[in-house]
Every structure is written in structure tokens, then in C-alpha cells.
Image (tube, rainbow, N blue to C red; front, side, top):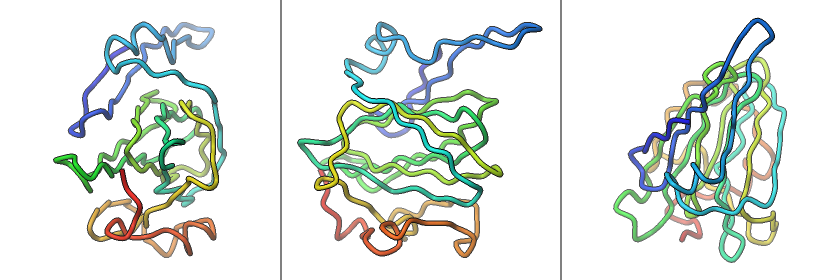
Length: 182
């Protein structure tokens, strides 16, 4: 696996090595010892999966302590634009983001540590998105930041009128300046 530091401290792009032949391919998507060596010690407790159609935007989501979550995300079918936003108030990169295209073909993964909001937009006709998390879901601790917050300035690459958002993301997400942050 190739571990690539992003411009935001703690966010990593991970490129697994695939071994292909006439039968298909094999790859390791996670090895604890390599992960610990490059990223640090993270104890994943749950795996999640979603299937979404083109234009679905999920995010920007996060959970507050004591239920904050680190995530290791990847796409097993399709293509998404995956985004991590630094919401650590004391961080020199507070409010900045990293956007990475994750596809079934490029097999890239993104590690998002605690203290970041996360979201993704489906660019293909549909996508299956998986993620490992290091803490369980707690609805009382979940928060959302507006995907179109001008202070963050994410270029999603799709007209906002074409986006499919949950009612929660449409009605409850706050701008970063009003959000509960770390």
C-alpha cells in the first residue's frame, strides 16, 4: 500500500496494490500494521456501506465527542468526489478541505481523522461506498455543515439544482461559522 499525506494534517490518501491476472484481481484494503506505521493507531469498530445514485450528495457530516469518528472510506463500484473539511478550531487549516476522486478503478481510499467533516458526491450513474469507523453512530452527537458553504468553497463540479440531498442535509446543516466544532 502507498500512503500519501494530503495537505491537511491527518488526512491520508491510500493506494492499495492490486494483483491482477486473467481471473480478476486481489488486493489488501487494510492491514493494521501498515496503517499504524503510517497513520497511527486506530481501532475500527464498525463497517458501513451505502448505495447511491448520480447526484446524491451525502454530507458534510461528523459527530461530536465522545462519539467523534475517524473514517477509512473507499468506493467499490462507481465514482465519487470525496471531501474532508478541517473543523478543528485550533488547526492552522481550519475550514480548509481536501477533495479526492475515489473510483472502483483507481481503488484509492481516504482516511479522515476525528475533527473533520466528511461528505461525498456520486459522479457515476450509481456508486457503492464503504467505510470503516472507529466509533459507533450516535444521532444525538451527529452534526452537518452545509455542502455549499461559501466560507469552505468546495467545487463539487455539478450544478446544485441537480444534487439530491436528504431532508436533514437540506434543512438542518449549518454554515461552518455557526456549527459546533472541535
